[in-house]
Structure formats: structure tokens, C-alpha cells
Length: 216
Image (cartoon, rainbow, N blue to C red; front, side, top):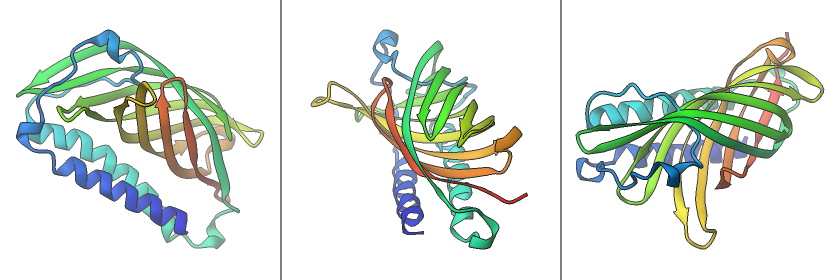
């Protein structure tokens, strides 16, 4: 329970940071596509300015938060023993496109993902990044995975939302994001869980969290 509460508090702080972005902070800082080849992508359909940017970010953030908090009050009798998550989430990206609106810069693309560890498999999905002049980038995406978890196979839809910033010491972009399982099929239809990822990407960020199989 304490781990879930800490995750929720971290996520609340990140949401607060996004909400407090001002109009003067919304101009673009990065325009070189080759410099951003590390990104995981998403199809952008944004038209409009600062309010639209907030909406784009807050909608998936709220989805992640609701899914996370719904587990905090779930009676133990309704779930199997929690399974700790560990492993590496790595990705490449393709189909980059850019949009500019009222001084804001939006990047969309398609990510091609690999999970090793608790989850074993591959996925693909769209994502959107918003570039901020302070030197950090916020984003979110939704990936459809074909994976195996504890010798059970199926597909999972995982929503993620977070941010990244250049780390001079590491010489890489440092990522932090929340992930939440939205749905599953096959032997993973009853799998639920959430957690965080952090570290330099895209060679592979460290994945943590908890999952459980709900009873039929």
C-alpha cells in the first residue's frame, strides 16, 4: 500500500507541474529531428494553443491516476498476491512529424517497444511529446503489447505519461514516467498493475511496479 501511495504522490506532483506551465513557457526549444531519434512517438492531431496543450497532457495523466488510485482501495480478497515488476523497457521510433501552435512545439511519431524481465514481448503505439523552453519534454503514449507474464500469454494495452530532460553527466536524455495497464486479452485479460520507469533512454529504462491477476 505504501508503495502505491508514494507513486500516487509522485504522479500528483508531476501533474501539478504540468498544470502550472505558463504561456511564456510554451515556446519551442528543439527543432532538430535527428537529435530526437531517441523519442517514443505518437500521432498528434492538435490544433490550438496553451489550453489545448494542457488538455492533451492532462487527459492521459488523469487516466493513469484514476487507474492507479482504483487499486489503492481494492480489497485484498478481490486480487491475487501482488507480483513485483522489474525489467527493462526499450524502444526505437519512426514516422516523426511536427506541429506548431501559438509558439508551442509538438512532436508525434510511432514507437516500437521491447520489454524484458517480468514482461517479455514487443509492442507498438503512438505518442506525443511537448517541448518546453526550460529544457524538459513532457509526453504520453499508449502501447499495444504482445507479451508473456509468468508463462501466461496475451496482449496488453499500457498507457504511459511522464517527462524527460537532458542529463549532462550521463550524456543522455533522462526519463521518468508512470505506466498503467488499461486492458488485456487472452491469458492476460485479468492482469492489472501500474508502476514507474526511469533512467536514460531509449537504450532501456528500468521498470518497476506491481501487477496482479484478478480472479475470474
